Length: 583
Image (cartoon, rainbow, N blue to C red; front, side, top):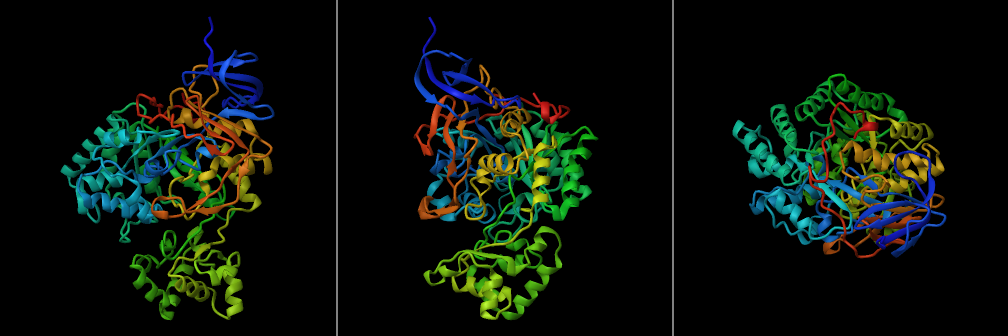
C-alpha cells in the first residue's frame, strides 16, 4: 500500500532548476524529500495549492554573513522570506569561529565585525553566546535550530587571531604560527567547515582602523592554508581581492595559485558591472580565463543589482576607503567630529578624494549624495533631498553642507552616494555577467552591512528586474542560475533541483508580481538596534526539507534547516569541470 504523503504541492507550474522549460505537475513530499512528480501524486496530510503560481527549487545564497544573526534570528530573515533555502556564511575571512578562549579575542572579533561588516556591536554582545572555542562547538550551537540550510566557511581573520593574538595585526606569521593555523583549519574542516575564506581588500579595516588580520598574511601563509583545504571532501576557497579596481596580475596569480594549492575552485567577491568602467569589468572576468589556462578555477560572484550604499560618517565604512580619509575615520567619534569640523582639514579631505579614479573616486561628487534619513525631527524635511540642493539653499559648498548636517546629528545622518551602474548599458552588462559561466549570481552580503545595503533580496531582485522588467534572462534560466548552478558548482548533495530523491527545498511564487517591497528600517535586532529591511512580494510559500517555513510572508516558526557539513552534505567538484556542468 502506498504511504500517504507528508505534503503535496498541486496545480503549479514547475521550473525544475535545470534550465529546461517549465511544465505543469504536482509534487509529493515525504520524509523531507521529493518522492513523486506528476499528474497524480496521491493523498497527502498537508496540501499547498499552487494554481497560477510557479514552483521552483529554493534559492541558494552563496555569500552571506549570517554567522552571528543565526543566534538571535534562526529564521534568517529576510532571506527566507525571499525564497532562499540554503545559505553559506563565513565569507571574506569573517567567521566567528574558531576562538582562542581568551575573552579579548572574542571582543576583538565583535568590534571588527561591527566595523567592517556593519553589525551593531550592541547586538553582537547581547545576541551571540560566544560560548565555543572550536569550529565543531560553533556548528553544534547553530544546530540547536535554524530555518534554512546553513553552512559556514572557516575565516582567515578568526584563525589568525586565535593563533597569533595581538600579533595578528602588523606581523608576518612565523613558521610555527602558520603550522598552528593549518592545524586549526584542518580540525575546523574535519568538523564540517565548508572551506577557507580570506580578504586582502583595502576596504576591510578593523575597529581601530587597522587592516583586518588576514591582510597581514604572506603568500606563504595563504598557500599553506589553501593546501589544507585539499585534504577535505566537498570544500572550496572564497576571497575578496582588490575589488573595485582592475585586478593586478600579482593578485590574479595569487588566486590561481591558491586554487591550484587547494585543488578546489576559488570564488571572489564582488563583480559589479558598470558601463563607466567596462575595462575593469573585462579585466576582472578575465581572471577566470587566466586561471583556467593554468589548470585552476576562479569564479566571480556578480552583484544582483546596482549597489546603492547607505552611509554614515559614524560607521565610516566605505567612506574610509576614499583617498586620504582613512586616518580621520579611524578616530573615536568625538575626535573625528573635531577633525571634520576643521575647514582646513575639510579642504585636504576633499582634495584627496578627488585625486582617486574609479568607483571610489566617484564618491567625491558630494552634491549628488542623497539625504536618506535624519536623526533629528527638525531635519526630517531634508530626507530625499540631495546634498547639492541643500548646499545651494544654504549657500555652502556641498561637502560643508553635508558635514555640517552630519555633525549636528553626531554623525548619524544617513546618506546615499549617487554611484553609477544603474543605467541601461550597465544593466545589459549585468545580464551578460549573470549568463557568463565564469560567474555566479550572488554577493548578497545578507546578515552584514545591516544599515547600508539591500542586496540581501538578491533572488527577488533578479526575478523582478532581471527577468520581468528588463528581460535580461528567461525565467527558467534565472531560476537555474540561482539554484542548480550554485548547487553543482559547490558540490551540494541532492539540492538545487526539483527531482525525485532530492530534498524538498522549494519556493512557490507568482512570476507576475514577485518583487521587493519598499526599503525601510526595522528596529528588531538585539539591544534595539535597527537594520534595513524589505518584505518579499509574490513569494507565497517556502519549504525547507519538506516543511513550510514561510507562508504568505509570515514565518511558520518551523526550524527544519540542516547545518551543512563538508563531505557529508557536499562533494568535491574537480577544478577541471566546467562551471555550467559541474557535478
